[in-house]
Image 1 (cartoon, rainbow, N blue to C red):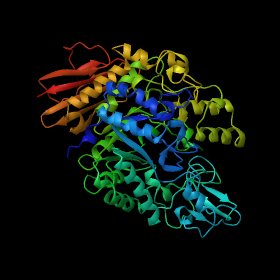
Image 2 (spheres, rainbow, N blue to C red):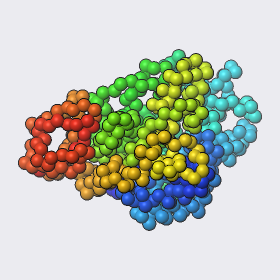
Image 3 (cartoon, rainbow, N blue to C red):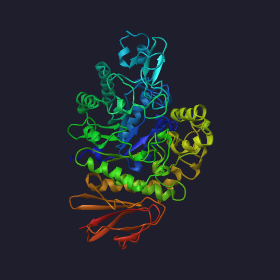
Image 4 (cartoon, rainbow, N blue to C red):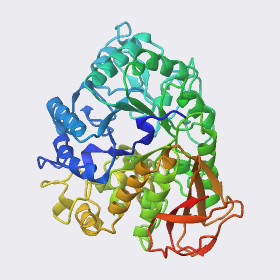
Length: 564
């Protein structure tokens, strides 16, 4: 397996609106990020993935772009962005930009032109269709709820939007569209960025003819998964992008790819033939969804550890020597990791550090979402008025007003699954609004900021933050954690997740208790060693303790080096 800098990197995702506000307007900005670069350097991350900062009317918090070549006023100026890039590079931190090219904003000049007439040169930049008998061209549902089609009275046709109606989908079948996007990518790459995270990239190729989706639920509109994900020309489009743009720069790419298999991933990330370097898959984050529910996205079901082990091991082994994994437990679209996978109450520290150990010892490039390194948790706002996410607000209106569900039950779903769980402002200190802003924050701060914040974390050598630091240093010092093979042990154990990482003669053993209980760990007989060295743990451990048979404490994590 070839060695590259992006395989060895640790990536930190910044959601700029919620990271740090430098001017008191309540919205995080680029100069706020510059103020905190030394913090990121201290943490030890190598790369920052910056969620969108382009010009946008902010219908979907920047994922609706009206100008790819400029910066949103709320975030600053292009000069501020150039200073941010220079200051990051001065600290040996690389920058990858969020690339949103499945759709634009309806306020983008292309779409403004496109909707003026059917014969406008920009008409074919988007997917316009006539309706059928006074209704939409097909039965596709938007990911954000309702129809994926919006009627436009000016020309009497509908346009496709898989997300918000203010996010019309681009027509990737049009080669001029593709060249426009490639020119834009070169513009940013020539400014010196180090790569792209490609938003919803496996949606860019749709089934020709845009046929109806299969009816899988009792609703007027159906999710058209079979027609919009991993479409027939996806690999062709990405290969063209790589050939014409990406192969000319020393950068890396990561694709956001829902509903992919390991087979898709190998095709997409194969070292020689793949269009991308790595991708984000979401199978592990969706284990607690009830697929039989009328709304799987917002449902919850108990999941067990063998399910997680099966998913993670399949991805580890199927991609071994063929593609490249990424690992993440949270991002701007997901609940907080410690609330979703751990125990954010009785065993907050233990589960936050155990999950950190899990994240940073698997094979693949790890991604830390802002605040994860201090153990930030989900938020339980009492009122829907305190939420800002368009998906959450649409869901509440649909479930309460249209379906007549109990508002308290709907709020319980939101507390568990809303994207705003990850978007509450970063908790820097115990001051007003957690030190995020001197003004009124765009969204309320999680009330637990007086206990969970950077100020406390930096001052406590035994904090979640400093545990992350040590893990990152451990990964950098041990190539086995990057390039070593992964092998699961105790595959059927319902409480313990344990595996080895092996590179030539070096072997590490990772032991993780995923429960608040105290299970017994028994080392399989086929794993032989003459001596051991404890590399990291989230509890105090007697260095002479035998590891062949031991009792683990709640959410305990240990990593050992085994000597032949």
